Amino acid sequence: MRVGVIDCGTNTTRLLIAESDSVGGVCEVLRDLRYSRLGEGVDATGSFNAEAIARTLGHVREFAEILSFHRVDQVRFVATSATRDARNRETFLSKVRMILGIDPEVITGEEEARLSFLGALHGAPTVPQNPDSTVEQLQSLDPATSRRVTERGVPTHHEDGVPTVEQLRGLDPATSRRVTETGVSTHHEDGVPTHREERVPTHREERVPTQGRLSARSRRIQNSQSHGGSLPTIQARTSLNVGSVRLRERFLHDDPPTATQVDEARGFVYQLLDNAVDFLKPVDLFIGVAGTLTSLSAMNQGLTTYDRSRVHNSVLTVDEIADLSQRLLEHSVEETLEIYPSLHPERAQVICAGGLIAAEISQRIGSDMIVRETDILDGVAMTLLEDVS
Image (cartoon, rainbow, N blue to C red; front, top):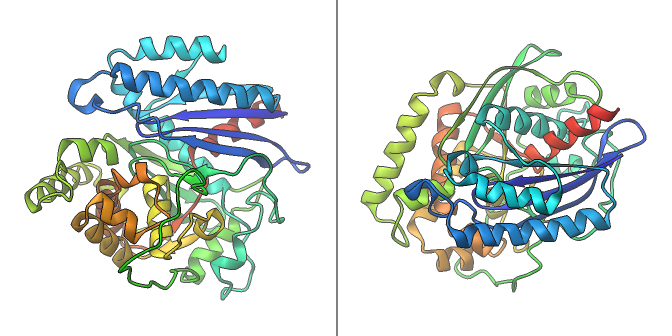
């Protein structure tokens, strides 16, 4: 059984094709992304503009051709924050229906959170019993089976996704420890940016990759999440209506933003998080997914080209996220691209807003963040494959 999933977010439209492996796990066939910016202007107007709809539909047509080429058996299209907010969403959805021949879904923020949580945990490799094992030793393992895998299909393009902050809290049945997953702002970009020139970094401070810092306790929690069994039970979930595109458009108008604009944006995020205080308590395992966080990890490691294997299961400390956020707010988009060559130009337009949100959340949680490549796409694929198993 081969399934396809399209995640249509505020900033990007993403595709995952997956199938069941020999032991009932999920095997990635292809992962791709387009920067559609469907949600451009929605925060201000409450509607999609014609240009954004046209861009996104063009990308959906491209994905329809890829799905046909790969002979996918079942497809699911999920739309998230921007589509929830747009008054004229049916204009867009009716055309998606014509292109794909399926009914597109506009999922709730809570369902978005559940699927992201499922996908994030699916991506956890089985951790060796040795508590001193580094994250690098885990990154080439199949998340479901702990076997080494080779991707098939075209090179991945760095995933990006939902423009909401999803925050969930679960209880790991194997260890009775709490587990939290968060996806900041635009969901994440995946893969190698093959379609742009590689820039040589200038005046960039060399940084040591933050890997292998995961505590022994967190490793034991990861190890308990073996395939076929103990996914944590979700105790609570929420989705906050803020993301990198929305925050950038509403507050951070200048390039770089002014101090007043930054203060206003931070105050807005702070108030939203205050209203979600029950979801932002210390946890034993803190997982981050989506485009802002995977981009921050690549930047923190000083990668010149985005590398999924280096990003998946890397670790960002609270201080590192805060430092990166401050740097991004102080530099223009052009300067940011020079300093961080792994960053996609479209992501660079909103990364300062996403970094601000990430910093505020991580400070509330107060724990090192494990960054993962798997997210809502993987969660949806899992549900499709489970329905036919």
